[in-house]
Image (tube, rainbow, N blue to C red):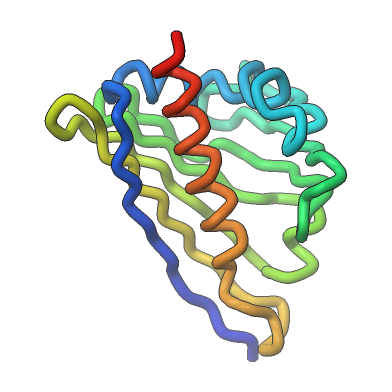
Length: 152
């Protein structure tokens, strides 16, 4: 029986919570334009790409270390709490993890924000590593979105 676990990280950013949240929620449009070196495309397959139940297909750029394609379902959205959770339902990541669910929460902190990313996973086999590479990729994206907002 393969093991599972949780991973979480807090990222302090300079952008206001609402501004950051709005940009993250628009990742379908924003990420492929702003970060073409990482995201080839993000397609909405079901729903509007923002509401719970929406399904999006992420196609990552050539440099992506672990995953080239990922189909994700948005599970819950709480606009007031600036919280969204999603599950990977198809794609390369599921070769390594039987299940992979994540949550993003954006909270005001001083003039900026605190962005929390948490994931729960179940490894496909014992020799699969804890998904630190995914966590690092997410943190990099959060910091890049923050930089983008600050340039506006």
